[in-house]
Length: 89
Image (cartoon, rainbow, N blue to C red):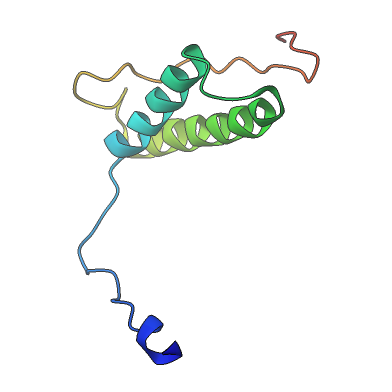
């Protein structure tokens, strides 16, 4: 029976993640946050992840010479750091 559970297919080649997909992740985090989708103890972790994603997007866009992600997504411009006590820098 253990052998039956080990039959996992390898990921397909050619599957990629675009900057637009990554920007959508930031928008999803923002939407879930506005709707109260995260509990207090999770906010620091989620916020830290969002900040790292935004920094990655900004660096990737700069390296590609683009101003923002094309499409109907809001470009990621401003990242506001929030202290553990909830105050913004």
